[in-house]
Length: 350
Image (cartoon, rainbow, N blue to C red):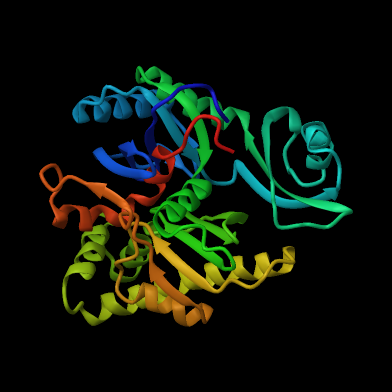
């Protein structure tokens, strides 16, 4: 959904924090100009739904002022159950007629009243059949969009684009690793409340799904099994990523939770396999604040039987060592993928 604007701030609104980034583009090279994070109160954003735009607006405005940004045009991303992304095939027609035809096709796939959603689509290049054409259909509930829009505009900024977090993740990957033609890859951003899963085939997104599970699951399981508060569970979780060894009871909980997350990822791959005729996923790239949880990457690799590695959102994105220390950038790198992908968008991108 594009509302107008030029240079963009990437605003990643998550379940537990917002991330705001400004990139400077020089040709095809990007450099981080400003970056900041701010925590969100529990329950302010749940499953991608903004429950109080006024409170969120104040947090956005405060972070924008703290970073001293002059740019006011924002690209933000949506996620969760209010966003539907579906690969469909339709009879081959003149591309100019797709926008009208897609409204009729959407009724079969969108579980909402079409009067309540914004529809968009992308024509995929993969299907060269003379009889059909593949399209990536995107639908988002209007009331969810309005709350994002209100929160950003009330902060004194301009909401130029509302993207999909999964697409931003794919955008960040291509910036850093190229299109990887001839390969089918899965990108997974494990957030605090939701994990974004995207499958990219020959450089095109062909599958996008948000898994309602993330880093907060560790807090819940630690609190339940060890009888501690959520705040104490968070401290124990963070401590497990830094200490060489964790207490046996904590290690057992983390290991069991790793398996829960792995099961959900496997289920999503099974759903992809059953609903798409595309090739099997070869490799997985992981991002998000939970990727440093002990043995999580290994558990996903073992559970899916796929090559699994951590996505580096700074592989081809530069930053000033005077503004940001390398240690700090290494620490925050897992959180950057979606915000970088949003900030690199241009008005008019499809």
